[in-house]
Amino acid sequence: MLSIQELRESLRLAEHLAHLSLTSGGDRDDVSHPQRGGETPKPYVPPKQLLLYLVRMGSFTSKPQVESEEDEDECVSIPEVAMDRQALLRWVRAPLAHLPPLLPHAYRPRPPALTPTKSSPASTPTRKVPGSFRVMQWNILAQALGTHADNFVKCPPAALQWNTRKYRILEEIITHQPHVVCLQEVDHYKVLEQVLAKLGYQGVFMPKPDSPCLYLPNNSGPDGCAIFWDNTKFKLVSKETRIVEVWHVQSNQVAILLILEERTSGKQLVVLTTHLKARQGALLSSLRNEQGKDLLAFLSEHRQIHPTIVCGDFNAEPSEPVYATMIDERTGLASAYALLHGGKEPPYSTWKVRGEQDCCHNIDYIFYTPLSLHVEGGLDVPTEDDLGPGRAPNLAYPSDHFSLVCDFTFLPNPDARTGNSSVETGSDKPPMLCHTGKSS
Image (tube, rainbow, N blue to C red; front, side, top):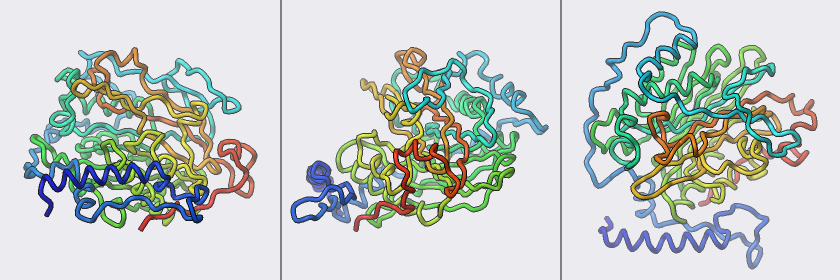
């Protein structure tokens, strides 16, 4: 067992070695970057004891766990009668009537000829393309983390109350009518499941094995990832879950993979969601890249040749190795939001004030397979003016991350595909449906 001093020294050395590995290309599993002698340098792997600490870092492992409290959602009186979307929206908005309206999202159609375009003022257009479906990606902010760990100094206390946030979260989802909803930091799954069931959604939840929420007061249990799908649009074919590994060691991050089948066409869709390790620095960047490789290995086991969408909070800017790993040409994946923004990711997907720091980052993504799926458009994140100086969360928005929403259509089968599919990837060659390889 390492002492605190030994742990700090080990972390400093590991950070230095990880930085050297990153700058020498050791985190790129790519034969196009040969080093002296024709060999690609291997990424830095921390010692086993340090690795075991790193994969749990953030779970407050020096503290005892706190007993979960009785779930206050038990007191929520969910209407028993069947409700349409507008009626359910009125129900979730009633407790919010004294607050400002939900922050708007401008709609951004697919750029013609892949050139940038200005956003449309319409927030949620009617879907007119036959066979289109809508996907939402969103880190909704775990209640225990938001109230006891994240230090949102400019957020009004009322905006962090669960009795406000749960209705705002539901309002955001119901307003934008996604067919598939990928969520992270879910620590109140039951109420989401019960309310969304009124509109025909079904869901799957997977908690983190050692959730940091369990070490915080007033927690309602572990946080984790969830996927909901509109059961009138898709039916569930199969479900797989995984505790994400780093150099063959289980981490504290999880992934859910579903195969859904569109009821009208019989076409199948693979959907994977995850939430990678947080914190900055070369060592954690390397760790996230290994998590990305493990995700791709997991994906390659199950997706076969199905159209695929990977959503998540990757806790990594586009400059980090894991982003390049996810969109490597061998994965067949590309970023939907980069396509909508003329080849570059948006400037931010999360914007918060923590202590004295204004934290503005793009770390949430919707990846997809361009040879089998076509991006029709998507919703922009709220503007800086709409957010105001306190950023998010606030009384008009329940999370420090913004929902990403994209409309897709299925492309014809590979044997019958047109030039549309190759335009998005920049190549006529079909991708190799394999992962980028795991480091030993």
